[in-house]
Length: 508
Image (cartoon, rainbow, N blue to C red; front, top):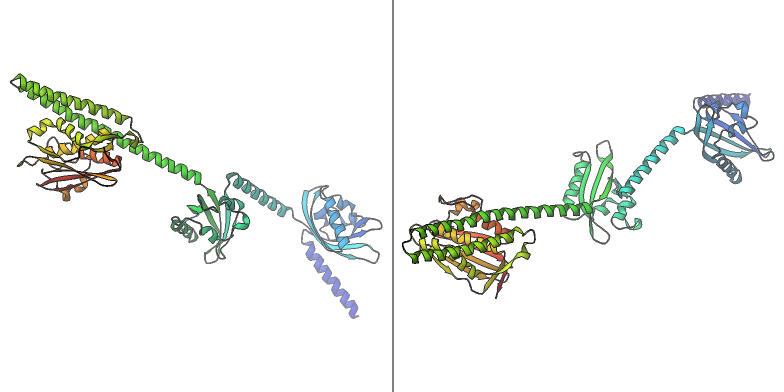
């Protein structure tokens, strides 16, 4: 009686189990293979057989051919191989394969079975088969997506990285590794391995950008930095990434991103910036040229006008002839200045290649001739203390304009209670020549006008003929040539302009 009750309980349990399995789309089966007859059959199948093979159990109970005929012709050989391997090794089997069904079309199935052998010498497998078409579709989409991404990355030569924030472990793709000249075996798959190679001047911004994104301040991470390669050279890299996983506290757990080699772009960018600097410098020199033309030629024009007026007022032939000689000297100076100005037009970026050797002592003499009338009219005394053999390599029009402006300003802004005295001195150092032009004129209130002294159209004494352009031109010409000028001045006592010429002197 007890045995009968146990069998009843077992039958009920099996019925419940079968009923549960019938709620699934899969198939519980028993597959039998008899070597003697080389035949397959399904002694037992759950109702899921229709969902799997679109046939009834009766159709395959004694002969499995209707079910096996549904298997895709490209997969049937593989299925038989798996079964035969299970027989040979007496091991369980697993297999994915396709079937072509009359109604559903092609479907992917996953089957597994556990093997045993019965008393007749046939092999029995009990197992489960279920439809994995949706899973396979997702897998294919993921694979296609991965392949497209891989193709795009390989085409762009960008690298990929995947960083586990908590463990500091990281994955770097072959492209990232090759970018730095390493092989995979040489590259340590940790974030610190990359971080430690970031240029020290870029690290502050690098870590700040990462921190901003990890803390949720920025929607994604992006940073340009230099990275040290295996050969210790540096490449510019555009590093971008995004947090894809956070814990319940909002802390970043996983970040993925890309590396792009932007070294070429950075070099082109630097070349572009250099070009802009060159163009700006050219524009500056062109502006200076325009001011030189306007300012210097106006001085000659004024001299011509003044000398002609005095010649017309002269009473004797000798006086007129004397003024004619002055006119000839000014005319000669004008011709030479125009020649120099023409040379400036051809000066572009190679200023240093257009310099000429100029004797400063002789240049002062020339300027005295040009300003002869103003010197005579104002009883100006000029002390030219420059060594006669001292040469400076400079653009002639520039040096003439610089010295001319400073001397003419010393005359123009003379003190009304004393005759102007102008001293021109030099100090020769190893790689510098310092020229000091000092006067005893009105002086300049540097506390009030010091920061405006070399500005365009800035005047300080209220003279009607002051244009506020001479010192501006002087300063810009010197800066263009890599030189400098400073001034010391005291109101009612005079001024001293000190010019520092760098690497441009020679003694004949």
